[in-house]
Length: 260
Ligand SMILES: Nc1ncnc2c1ncn2[C@@H]1O[C@H](COP(=O)(O)OP(=O)(O)OP(=O)(O)O)[C@@H](O)[C@H]1O
Ligand SMILES: [Mg+2]
View (cartoon, rainbow, N blue to C red):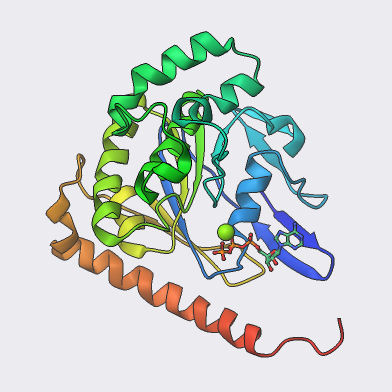
């Protein structure tokens, strides 16, 4: 993405954003609330068109945002499970929309269930599942829609710390197995470092990339890596940058424009 900007009425969500992601890379994105992270994902998913002048390239080709629709898999910020569909039928939703025969799609989902910690829950409905399980159903739906690039918008945001740590390790295992490219938004700096090959820190709105930090911690990442001196050093650098940007966005939020 080169020189990407996006304005909604009087709000400039993104301005001059530059970003590239290599095949197989796991890139995490952190930044103050409202800085345009979800907007960035909506553009990459083909759901929003950036303002004129920006350049999008995908798999070596220049393209318009709309052409990206259906070429990446996307887990939006809310899990968006359909309450009237059971686990398997929620998981195959994207395949179904794409026109896959339901029977085949269900068979594929059933094979994947154990890996997502959902064996035996195939006929349960979302209200019968825990928060962590609902997130895994939404993730399974995203994995089943086989695209090289996956966008995950705060997939673990609603989880408690223990479940979250478990899900992070699990996601790295599945990522190593399926070898997808992942762009992952989070508010949690530890999570961003633990998962990522690279962490992008965004500026306060209008959002752009403020800092790109390579994470050279060895893989597979062990749970105790979070106490290593290298991890702490990275965390300090990132926190300082994020703190600066959060203060900016807080100050501008405190002083809303009088005329709208
Ligand atoms: N469809 C829309 N119409 C109008 N304004 C929008 C729209 N989508 C986003 N915005 C505005 O763009 C800005 C960025 O929103 P966005 O959802 O991308 O932020 P975010 O970084 O994902 O925030 P959070 O961390 O809270 O999820 C906000 O000011 C928001 O109000
Ligand atoms: Mg968001």
